Image 1 (cartoon, rainbow, N blue to C red):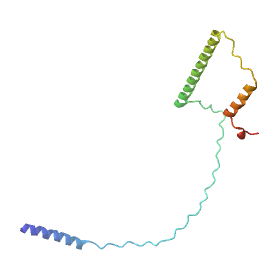
Image 2: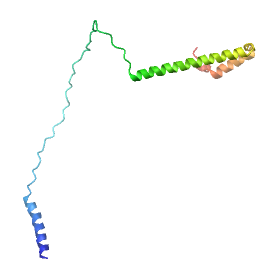
Image 3: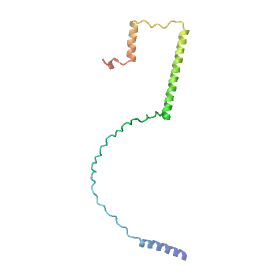
Image 4: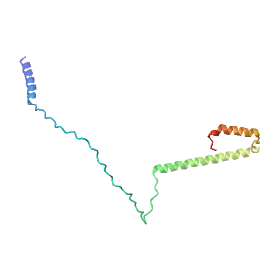
Length: 135
């Protein structure tokens, strides 16, 4: 029990001695509140474009393509070749169909009042209305 009181006294002594040893806090200086003034407008000096003269007798710039440019060019060429091949195939098929069929080419229907009336109706349905047409 004696050791208990010794420990309590030691703790109390440590607490009170710490309170005594503290320095007083120093008050902070007060800075006066100055009104904020707008910054003056600083005019930037005008910079004129510097023209670089062309070098006489200089070797020409090399025409170098980057990898994406080469890939894009190759893709375009491949697409063009596929389209041309498709058109050749289509033309061959049409020629084969014409040579196989022995019937003459289709004759357009005769133009009469009924067909003209149908043409006007279809132009109204498929085209712009008359109210929107420019005169």
